[in-house]
Length: 382
Ligand code: NZQ
Ligand code: ZN
Image (cartoon, rainbow, N blue to C red; front, side, top):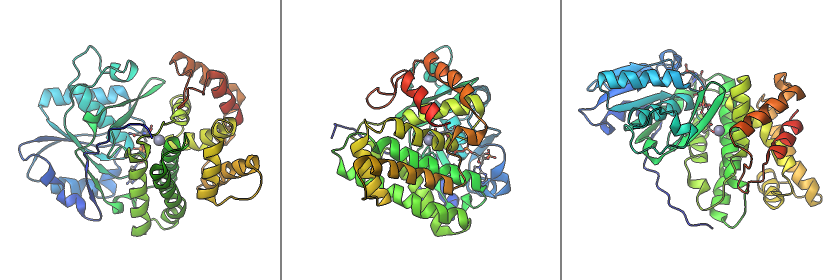
């Protein structure tokens, strides 16, 4: 196991009714900016609950943060904060609202010429406004981690800073009852792939491995229940907690991580607007088939421990594990091929060219995902 430093400072309030208790975690004198997306929080009652909880605070609002949050939108919030002097951000919504709010928090305090440099040039985040989250879509893990993904034009880029980890996260499973099935499925797959990107590297970390396998098995068992019974509190609660644990950071400590599926997936979202979770369901099975030699030992473990595949030679068991994962994604009404989204071989050159432009020429924990390998993955995903 590699050396590591791990701190998860986010206080979690989990369970029905917990939104009512959030104000005690925000300094009383804070001037709070409530950030949200396209309006789901008005329809499902979450906005009213948050406003009621914040009755003792000075509160302003910034809405219309779009899915896959865009830089120009977020910069409007930066301007509002500078003009009106907010000093605490409360993000209410899915990963896009949370990520967008993290960028806003860092951008307000950025001292260089253009905060986009945080994403495009890895400019260091030296300060950020304090922020917290009320999550309404279990998927990204953004509610307790320091990552954020922002889009500008056709560039969808991420940054990471401990300074934008939410101070607290409210996870009330009942806020997810209003999710459309498509978003629930997106979240199940996103969380599953987060686990895989931390798990499918070298071995030597059995605690992390078994935590990871536990989260994957939970997603396989509870995800379909959450889809079939939208108001099953137990299923929604287990899905929400699994998604948080999938990318809180604990699964990836001390082990190499492989975020190549996400990198390739971001290109599909940036160019064709596919939902984040859907891009991962397309890329991961193809990537594992192309990289099965490099990842053979771990794929065998995955097949046996997650899908109980013990028959056949190594080659057959590896393929059976990947096929079982793909079948799980498809059982959630999730396309796993580019053709499911009317994309064919004519898109591959553009996707590979975009990776090249961004210098993404040696992805994965071992740098093994070269442009040629990425091309092979997109072709295998047709
Ligand atoms: O905008 P509103 O009206 O709120 O509607 C949203 C949006 O249309 C809706 N929604 C959210 N909660 C709802 C709801 N509708 C009904 N009831 C509710 N309770 O769902 C739609 C999608 O929301 P979005 O926030 O975009 O989805 P998700 O949580 O999947 O976030 C995706 C974004 O997170 C990034 C992705 O790249 C993408 O930009 N990621 C962030 C990560 C991180 N910070 O660690 C890691 C992930 O790998 C991912 O890359
Ligand atoms: Zn993801």
